[in-house]
Image (cartoon, rainbow, N blue to C red; front, side, top):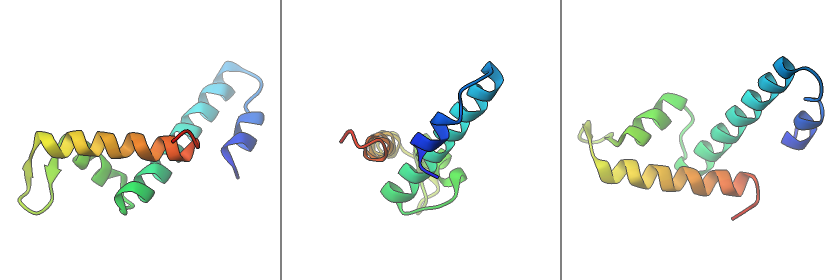
Length: 82
């Protein structure tokens, strides 16, 4: 179901709006992550945003910066604002 269809169904109570907003955020993060990072597990996204180097198992600031930039690019693509 496209995000615009979900957002149309989100009219109503504040609780319903909050649930729909959370769903849209989750979908956009998953799609952006899967397309930009070629990974599927959300725990990998958290690790990458923390700067984890999967080869050395160390945390590096440069990886975190690149990960945030890639995630931003993916989210903008998802909303077609790239």
